[in-house]
Amino acid sequence: MGRCRNRGIDWWQGRFSGFGYRVTVPRRAIIDVLATAQKHLSAEEIYILVRKVYPNIGFTTVYRTLDLLGQTGLVAKFDFGDGRARYELSQGPGGKRHHHHLVCVDCGRVIDYDGFEQEEKEFLDKVETSLSKKFNFKITRHLIQFYGLCENCRRQNNSV
Amino acid sequence: MGRCRNRGIDWWQGRFSGFGYRVTVPRRAIIDVLATAQKHLSAEEIYILVRKVYPNIGFTTVYRTLDLLGQTGLVAKFDFGDGRARYELSQGPGGKRHHHHLVCVDCGRVIDYDGFEQEEKEFLDKVETSLSKKFNFKITRHLIQFYGLCENCRRQNNSV
DNA sequence: CTCAATGCAAATCTTTTGCATGCTA
DNA sequence: TAGCATGCAAAAGATTTGCATTGAG
Image: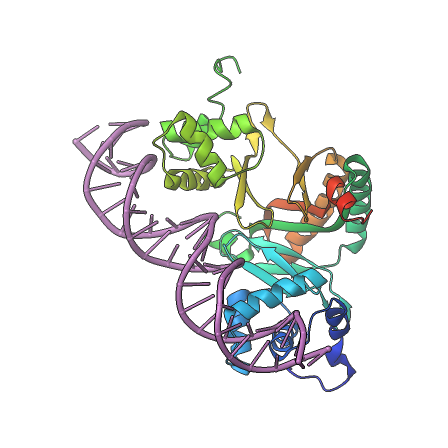
């Protein structure tokens, strides 16, 4: 956890400085938190976690860094409908992570899932190709989310 | 259908009062605005439009009504990434509207599209069935959005 | 009549901005 | 050293809440 000593540590720096951004202690710490957490965190959660290691960091830096990371494509931003954004690393030392989210509309729990690459690819290829032509739109990414009731909330709501 | 003289105004009332909610002038006005606009509006846009017809309405009522409409499934809420929510009628006098959104990440323009019911159905059936089983999750709705550069922004960015 | 719905003002909460100072490249 | 980056405080917005009043059923 935390610090990797081998070559893996700088997997993101090339991309980051390639955009003309400087590699600083706060930025390093934020990426480290995201990489360790391996899940979607709110800005506040990131702020709290980073402060444990680097107590002087400000909220501003967290937001600004997340924004930069978003621009480089290293971080993806999500809205699960509870009024605060969530952030997660879209790549890691091991390459891209591909998954989507299953959101419980009752308790807010979010489940990550994967495993539909093939079906998804088929569908997206058709739609993206067609939309690109029809609207002369250059599609760069997509968002797929499912909403419903999780196991616990189904039980509690008697709505099986 | 036969009884809707004035612009099909009461197609939604059954559903609404079925939930135990009262049919009031402000609520009628808000739904009317949404039905007339036929597109995603922000709370503020709705507020402004409703005020033209019903000048005393408050922001609070707009938000509270949109929330209720969301609960009944009459209205869907979207986040296009610009910090304010958008709302649109998910059904109308003519039944459900089925479409998704294509968002320009540069200028924020949002295009509605439809016409992939078949492909989408195939894909969603597979995924939803599998996810329901795997996580014992009752899926009630999904969100699909595409992001990229619209025609104008492609040109301006020289990134064709 | 009763209690849900409304409107106003104030509060909340997340995210952004201005600016003097610090630190990377 | 030159600017980008940081942190603080304050601002900006969107949305929500408290409460007295109004009105639908």
